[in-house]
Each structure stands twice: as structure tokens, then as C-alpha cells.
Image 1 (cartoon, helix red, strand yellow):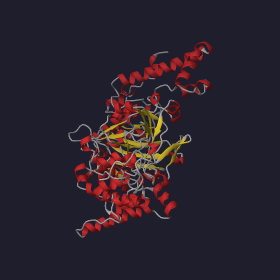
Image 2 (cartoon, one colour; image 1 turned 180 degrees about the vertical axis):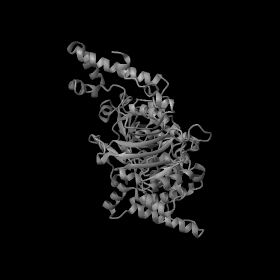
Image 3 (cartoon, rainbow, N blue to C red; image 1 turned 90 degrees about the vertical axis):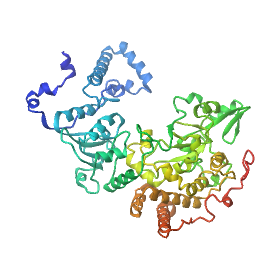
Image 4 (cartoon, rainbow, N blue to C red; image 1 turned 180 degrees about the horizontal axis):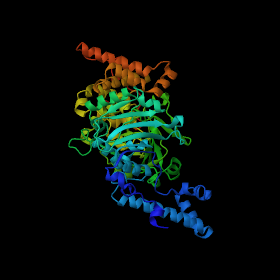
Length: 576
């Protein structure tokens, strides 16, 4: 068998010489194959050897495959041929130079066909996975479509109505590309369920290349707007507000932050110790630290333990995490327990000793949850990789309060939901959130800082955060009613600074369906929305009258009369 028969080479100019002599195809339409070129052992053996396919891990599967040399030489030979075919095909695609934009990452055949179809005619229309507009491995191809004004339309579908006989959760799109004629603006629809949704005026909208570069200037990937109004609100925000970190430009990181992780839950697991292990080895628990002589083990914080403005969201108990109760949070000496502890010396080497507290966000998130971007200050400690960190220079620690307020706001969370395609809050998403400029927010620091201190300093283990903001007294009492009003005041201010008028604030709050459901169950009304709109109106009225805004709280935020009387477990740290 010749190589051309085995690999089924296709060169369009050779197969269609007359067409290309006349300038190429007028249009190319197709549903190219979707599938990874890399041989997937589990899938390949599924029907040939279920035992190998069901192996517990890759190493076990490799041993079973090696045993085939003796037990089933014919199957072993078939496997080697298939693997060689996949490897040679991948090598040809990567090294031929024909696919410089699409031969990236773990290559899927649809990427290559999209590139090929684009070059074959004046127009190309195809059915491909929606990841072509959002995945990291296709970002160069999609970016080129945008910058060369080749994108005509992208209509994204959820397969809930079984338009294709594939998993209903799998998303695909109708992608149309112009091969020669520049396109001023492209048409988009996201989350369509049937073909008729393409013409739905509430879902159908246009974006220019300049708009797309506003949303994601680093990756040039597409946002995923559910409605025309979502697109209009988000476009307006990005025209007013810069992204957190714009790569490759001077002054592209006004907050001077770095994004990092500390302990990898798999690779660093050899450093982790359980409570039983430490106690059996003579370590003594003080708060949530283990001490033996001058040595110390620190708690390993993970995403389950924190929530917005709350470093005691959950504690590990009886083999699993449970939510901390309000009664426990009202005890300023109560500390959340981790599942694992890590050496203090190792932690110091990884993060240094010049950070009095840490600032992390949950890496696992969904756009359908009550809140999507969840960020909180928490004590200096070990941190798992699913709780990535904002590293702020020591000289800029005062900016942490305003940054936390902006990124935990509903305005920023609304933006987050237009970008997040899966369940992982990767760095490239966070870098491209629209975050208010630190110079603008610094003018509102007298309003923001007292509120952040009262929200976050509710236990003695956050005393260093309070000190960094000039507070040297006892922690503040956990008071759910006060906290709800404080958060509403912060959110109302952020909506105003992000430039949203009242009708759009009303609309944005209604997009948080899960939060509304939770509020209705607990309060019988959408209380969070009512509080935010009430404070927004009060701020607007104060501005109209040229007066200072007056808080609903009595006493005002961070007043000394609302501190706890609980004594520090290690003795009083003093009162200012």
C-alpha cells in the first residue's frame, strides 16, 4: 500500500486544477470531522480490549498494552500501526508549514479543516465546535479572523434539542468566513437552541473587530453573550474601563499585580500532613496552626474554605468540609480547619514573609451559580492551586481593599459571566476582566476601606489585615444584617463607577437567577436586589442635591462600638 493510500493525502490544487485555474471556489460549505488526531488509548481499546480500556490509570494501561506482545501479538501490531499513523499525521500537520495558525496544542481535525476551508474559497461556511472562538489552542486562528476582518458570523448552539446526535452538553457553531472581502462587523448568536434563534432580535447582535479586541485584548477570543442587551452593556463597560492586565503594552498593569499559585494539590502532596499524622508525631494544635518547639505547620487553605469577604466560609470536619454557622462566626476566636497542613518554612520560601495576609479567588466557578467570581482576603498560610492568588507589592497593600471591592461587585461579576465558557477561572480570564483604575478608586478609599475592614476583620486571625488598614482594635462582630447593607452600599457605588444607569442595574441584578432563588427561599423576596437599588437611588439623589451620601447604618461602618468582646486566643494585640 502506498503512503498516499494509507494517509489519504488531499491537495486541493491537484484534485481541482480547473477550479484553481479560475481563481478558486466561490464558496466552501461543510461539516468537517471533529476528533483529536492523537491516539486516545482508552477509546481505541474500548471495543478491542475492554480490560485495557478500563485500566485504573495510564501506567496500568501501559503495562497491559506491553503484555499484548505475548498474549495477542496481532492486536499489539494493530495498536502500534494506529499509534504510528496518528503520530506521523500530527508531525506532518505541525511541520508542513501549511497550518501555522491552527496546528496548535492537542490538535483536533476540525481546526485543520477550518484553516483549509478558509483558504479554499471566497466564502466558507462550516459546522465546528464552539471552542474555535474561545479555546486556547484555537486563539491564534480566531484572532487572525478578527484582525483581518474575515469573520462574517458565528452562531453558537447548545445541543439540548438534539440537532445533532451528540452529547446534549456539547456546543457547536455555524461559522462563516470571508476569504477575501473585509467584513466591517460580524453577526453573533450564543446559546441558541434551534435554527430560528438565529433571527431572534434579542439574541442576534453585531460586533466589530475593535469591540472584540476591547473584551479580550490578550487572547482576542470571543465573549459569550446570551442577549443583545448583555452585549450592549458589556461593550459600554469595556469602552470606559480597562482590563486588569493588558499584556505587551506600557502601563498595561496599573494595579501592579501578579497572579500566582502556591501548592499544587497533586505535585506537592508529599508535603501535606493530616491532623492525625501531626498529632501522632508530637505536634500541638494552636488555633489552626500546629506547633512543635520553634517549628510550625500552617493550614492549607483551599477554595472551599473561603467566599466573598469571608475567610471562614467552611471548615473540615469528620472527613469533609461543612459550612461554618453564623453562631460560630460570631466567635472571633473561631478558626476554620483545613484538611491538610504544610510546613511554615516551605511556605515562607514560596511566598516570602512580607505579605501580612493573602488575597485569593476561587478557580472553580460557573456562570449559573449565585456568584461567579469569588474573592477574599485570608490569613497568611499555605494555599492550594485551586485558590490562586493576587500578589500585590508591599507598598501597594492599601489598594487591596479597593481591588477587592471592585472585583467582588455585581458589576464585575456580570462581566465575568460573559467570558467564562467552562468551570475553570483561568488566569487569562481574570487578566481580561474590566477592573476600575486604581487612581479612580483611590478617591473613594475613605468610603471603601472601613466597609472592607468590617466585612473581613471578623476574627483574630485577620488582625494583620486590619493593621495594614490602620485598625489596631478588636475584630468586628459578625452581623448578617449590617453586612448585607454594607455590601449593598459597595455594590451601588461600583455600579455607578462602572457607568451603569438604573435600568441597566435593574437588568443586571435580574441576571443572577440562582441568587434570586436563594433570596426568595430565605427572605421571601429578592432582598439583595432591593438593597442594592435602594442604595443606588440614595447615592444618585445625594449627587443630584450636591450632598454627601448618608449610610443607612447606625453606627457607621467600622465604628468601634460594633467590635467583638472576645479576647485574642494569644492575648490582646492592643487597642488604638
